[in-house]
Image (cartoon, rainbow, N blue to C red; front, side, top):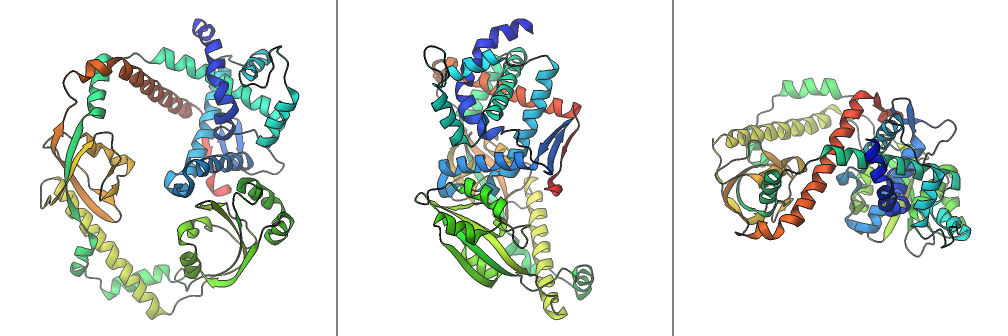
Length: 458
């Protein structure tokens, strides 16, 4: 291990030139601690504060918005969970690195800075450039140094783990090549809950029983009084910075006035009207869990960001029993139709009653979507790895319908193509194998440490 550490010392510094300045800043975050801060998660003795989590979240959201624009969907990406996982991984790996005696010296830190252009040819830190860089990242020198030393220490551990844990098996690499470069033609049967609604019966007793359980929760629409401001490229301020400042002031109108930004007061409106007005923002997710006076995270639509504040909130009133019964009957009908469709689809995976009426063109085995159907859930993308004649052994839910997939034909890469691609692909395969090994290594470390995520507390 010591030989490996010495071997990778300079390698880590070289690789981290970009990591230091960009990735670690928003992925692993800063050690942001404020008095009275809530605890987002615990990794052994280490406490991850809500402010640290929020800081990383805002930076990642801002980065993805700049990359993807209006295609960025925080919920679909699972950004909340992604941030939590990466922060937990950071401290799990840092704890292990420190257990092994790994650390980063001041000299190594300065050598890393030298590769970023912040140190001149004589080895002196360009103070003006350095402070401007920190100002743009909104952090103090001590915080930056501590964070980057942690990043470099973790990178040393990663280099050791990956190099000592992965051997490239050429047969396995070839099989992986076939899976990625091959093509599959899929056919599918559709089981739509709408086709089963006429077969559903819901008796009055079921409705009455459900009403007794839920009558306290069956209410008319909430009435919300919202204000919002719009931030774009001409506003002169980043949406993430505006959000952090608004968390302190809690006054959208005063903040907008101080920055020359218009604040729109919608007045009291039904929640459905607000959802319709801001349909592209998925505002129901933006406002979820917010109470009177709360400030929302920036919601991106095209080149604009919207920040909302709830001025007042009037909860819906209990529904009349007859109106509630209609809603509950419809819900029970939908649930039963959905269950019938799923059961029929499960039978279809076993060859019972599945009519494969649609098929695709040849698709790459690395595909993530089917033209005309849309994205395939990540956990079901093994459908593209089916061999000819195989049926996927579970229904796949897409947009409320259930699908049974089978492979009706397949193509392998052209003869001789492997020999041309072998060296390049072996390198790609090795990189993926190292990544997979590191993930498994990190998961094993989590089991040995007490990891607790406190979603409900913050």
